[in-house]
Image (cartoon, rainbow, N blue to C red):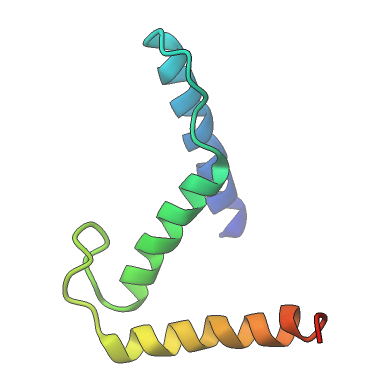
Length: 83
């Protein structure tokens, strides 16, 4: 699954770059981090039962659980090395 997600992110970046070039726009496409952030937001909405486009209708209790889980990952894997 993660391989498919990574491939989709790479394809989105490449497609945007190609479309900008074809349109004669001399700007760089957004970095892959942009696409990751958009996917993250939409997946978060789905996890919380919200509409991934409007972000409406989500369950705040599930959102809180997901956020606390992310904080626990941060604390366990990344903050322990800075103390």
